[in-house]
Structure formats: structure tokens, C-alpha cells
Length: 309
Image 1 (cartoon, rainbow, N blue to C red):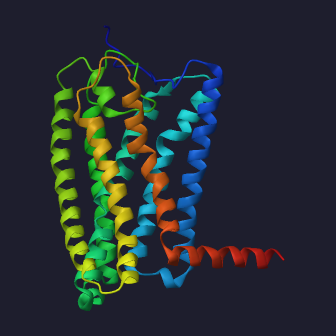
Image 2: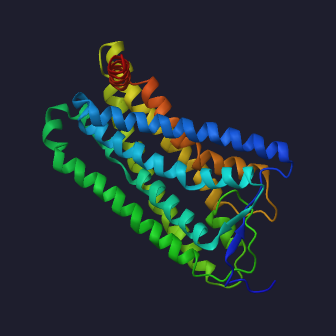
């Protein structure tokens, strides 16, 4: 294969080469994208406007919604444009931007331990909640998550695009690092492999921290005498744990398994599960299972209706 280091365009994987299926893919992704965008925007607006939601838990949920807005906007719009335009191309700079911003938002999301820690303190040490989860502590935790995401994405992007590429064909619907490493033609890709291995260690360490926190939370929840109290506590904890588990498990499969020689349906499904589903699920589970958010949204819609009248 010839050296394509100076390439200006990559070719992404098509969901189908049948025109009708390309249009179907466009509308499916459009619905998914609009659902994720509207859902997360509603959460942001509700939390910002309702002073009853100006608490640590909803502060972290606000940050999570903003991160999800960024994550879902990184690759879906480009994939939709390519489908409707019957194209596969993405510019070199566009590919770099996809890798950088996906890791920026995804790593920031994963680094946001504040939600787990907030629930841990609220349930396991309620008497010290006001002291521990003060405004300054919340801002510091959120800022640390954003900074960690920025450094993490810069590290991955730099080590990935330092390699020499021997092909411009990426067997994925967005610029995914394992697929980029597959088309490298020098040993520099081993640097990114090392970064991924180190990152996996950090990710599973963080996940272990989250699991330990929730184990302690569930032990305390089971001691709550009333069924209503237990249900309320579980409803604020389980959604976060479920989404984090889905993201980490599918992401680990995508990045740690050997890259197949040809594109497979399993690779495509896994990539959708870790890149698209979590930002889509978060607003659904947090609005359907959270009474405070539903009340805030109800007030907001009532105000809009009354204002229009």
C-alpha cells in the first residue's frame, strides 16, 4: 500500500449501498439525534430555570446533559449528511475533530464521579451532606471532569494522528481510533495502543470507584424502613449506574478487542451502543424516573402555554 500521509480525505463506512436504505438511515438517525438533543436541552433548561433544582445532584445532571449534547453531535450529523448526499467522505481535519471532541465529551462524562459521590454522601452520610457537597466542592469536581476530558482527548488525538496512514478507508461510520490504527503503516501506532491500555486501566479504576460507591449506597438503601423511601433512592441511583455500565462495557469491547479484517455488523452495533445510546438514554431515564424534573418541565410548559395566550 502506498503512503497516504498527505491525504486530505478519509472514506467512512456506509450503512448500506442501497439508496432507499441510505435514506432510511438518515431518517432513523435524524429521529435519534433530535430526541437526544431535545431531551438533553429540556433537562438543561429545566435545571437552569427552576431554582428548586439548584442542588448538587442536579448541578451534576446539568453537566452530564451538556456533555451528552456534545457527544451526540460529534458523529451523527456527519453520518446523516453522508447518507442523504450518498457520500462517504470526511476531511482529514474533520476526522481529527471527531476524535478530539468525542473523547473530550465522553471522557468528561466518564470522569464526572460527582453524581455517584453526591448520592453516596446524601444516603450514607446525610448529616454532613451540606458541608461535604458545598458549592465550591461541586464546581471543583465538575471542573476536574472537564479538564480531565480535555487532557485525555488531546493525548489520544495527538498519538493517533502522529502515525502514517497507508489507506484512507475507515471501516466505521465515524473516525474510530481502532479503525484508524488498523490502516497505519508504521510502528507509531504502538504509542496509541499503549495509551489505550493505560486508559483502560484508568477507566476500570474509575468504574471500580463508582461500583464501590453504589454498593455502599445500596446497603444503606436496604436499611430504609419505608418502601417509598427505598424506591426513591433507587430511582436516583440505578439509572446512572446502568448508563455508565453500558458505556464502559461496549466501549471496552470496541477498543480492547482485536480489530477484524473486514467490517462486521457486530462492530457497527457496538459502536452505536457506546456512542449514540447513552446520550439518548440519559434524558429518557432521568425525566421518566425523576419527579422533580417532570414537575419542573410541567411548570415550564404551563408558563409557555399561558404566555402564548
